[in-house]
Length: 305
Ligand code: CP
Image (cartoon, rainbow, N blue to C red; front, side, top):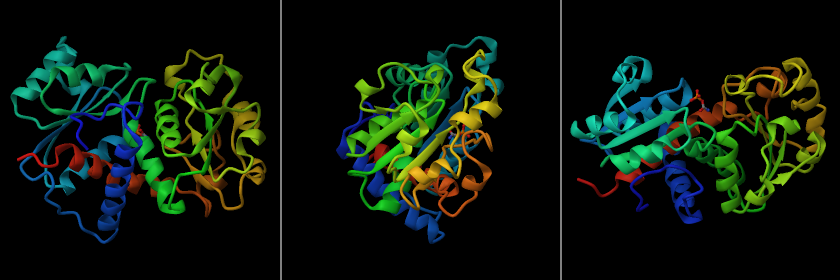
């Protein structure tokens, strides 16, 4: 991979995504074998810079960098000089001056990682920017699918939930369609943005239509923190009319995978039975997250002394 930064999958070619997944699958094999002392990032410094809360992404980036031998520093907005009025660009220049090699950034504003990437010498990885993209989440989702199905070509993926506010939905749509999968989407009209069909999605009018013949069913979190309310009557009614349950899963292929990027609103996007059932790959996605982030960090810095 020849790029300086990973800001989104809209920017990436199918070949780049394929390379990340291939390296990621190898990393996952190493992790399963208990190998956590690699040297790809030996002598490198990695900073996670998170302006929004996170469990999975921040922790898995930190572990990925440490497993590759990097020095790692973690900064959250609440504990940084952002609270004293420092700008994003000045924060970036400060981190650059300390010879950081990679900055991993989550920010509530779409485009913030791109602004940082244009300002700093360090590689920048987008760990989720507002409602724009979450590239490594989509990569780990694709890695999990590839491990189960070998190829993504022709795979039918149904995505249901709060698509309007979801950076995960967008990155998955870009990545999956580039690798030849078809993506069906369904949500209440109030949670479906316009123009998804022009971005390559099959926009559906019911859960049954979205799940029809699906190989993978992905629930997305209802992002109450990005809403003013009024998009649906209540979480109970959302679950009843729009959530994925055992009955509606009968429309998907037998044994279709259940996925969710997390954190899950249990019993809202997916029933507890599906979350904890035999076809669930939600925990598997978490391990894929460490592996794919190791792949991204290794490929971005490859060949650098
Ligand atoms: N999937 C995801 O981005 O989770 P976190 O918000 O916990 O990082």
